[in-house]
Length: 236
Image 1 (tube, rainbow, N blue to C red):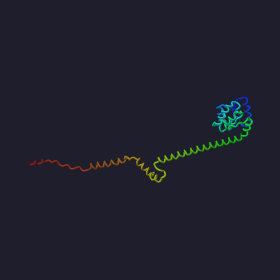
Image 2: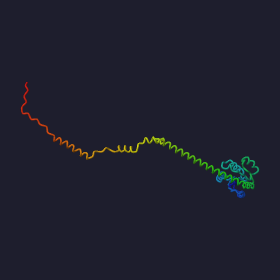
Image 3: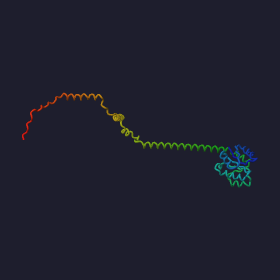
Image 4: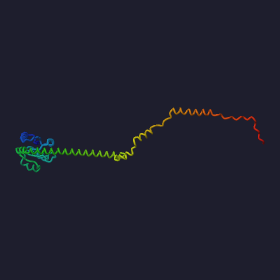
């Protein structure tokens, strides 16, 4: 498990960090300067934060107050070491959740609480995984419901735009003409009237010729003889 150790750079900082690391925790050393330590805490996600008050105690107090109220660090365990006696009451009043220990005591406390932090981290990760899975299932169900609604809407629009209802097959079959009758009607309309062929024209010509010959063979009308005697004049 990771533990963030905030201490200004000095000759004793490395020695303190090595002694705290003997507890078994993975120690991350950083100066208590904002926003650097806040970014490190957000990225590394430590199980606890230790603040050393031996250098710049007023600044360390402000840092502890910020960590106890910040969104990313307010749930973490907060420890303080090398706190002067005249600042302990002020520190407890300002930051009630902080735990003050000596360097040796703090190393033992961290070693004792490491299994607890590991169990809490595993439970938190499992809860986060289940939450992500639950949200994914909700999104999947919402997408399926949306697709179903869209499909029902399309079917409703298709049924409304259709001229006949597919639920009444007898009615639709009675309206549909038979295939043979439909083809016959189309063929009658499509075929144009036939023109008289040349054979019929030739057959009609002899009839006309027969009429002419019969007219020629008819006996000629008798002509009246011319009157030679003059007509008598009428008396006045």
